[in-house]
Amino acid sequence: MAQRVASSSPVTLKEVKADVRVKTYITGANDLLNAMGYTEHGHRHAGIVSTVTKYILSNIGASEREQELGSIAAYLHDIGNVVNRLHHPMIGATMAEDILWNLGMPADEIAPILGAIGNHEELAGQPISHMSAALIIADKGDVHFSRVQNPVLETFDIHDRVNYAVQKSRIELDNDKREIALTLEIDTQAATVMEYFEIFLSRMVMCRNAAETLGYRFVLSVNGTLLE
Ligand SMILES: [Fe+2]
Ligand SMILES: [Fe+2]
Image (cartoon, rainbow, N blue to C red):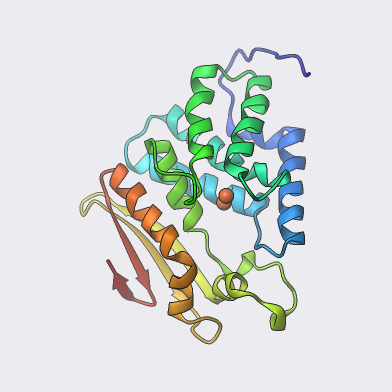
């Protein structure tokens, strides 16, 4: 087992991203899901979810350190897919514990990260903290054509079609209205809005619960139509 080196300064997202295990396992997680026919879950997804989680936490008034810890949790949230898609939140939390401990992060900073990673999927998770709620919204909001890895259009499944159809996706907070808005532009030639809902309804319900945990209302806008 790797020997722990206590860090004299707070562990940063930059250090986590540079860690050889983090780099390799995120690449491996994406390779595994690609082989299973899933959309992109690699460094691009990790980076976007990390940035958006930090954006949400900064807008709700979280401290700088809470924002940084949230961005780290988000960067690592799908790392467990390197082992198996099933139970990847729990596997990922276990892996993150070892990685962050070995980078010198104190246990009281690791603990909320583990809960946020372990609760990010709708089948066995729920928003259990502000960090967890921000991560859930950032993760479920990352729907985009660039995530489709299947090069053969004719063999697209519904996940490929729906992601392929999304030309733009954006998450914005409005502190005056107390709203978190997910705005999507969907090419209805590629997938219908109904298809979007077929696979995203449970995720949107999770986003609504997450927004409520933060004291906000979740608002979804598809092609200029508000769906509240
Ligand atoms: Fe996940
Ligand atoms: Fe994810």
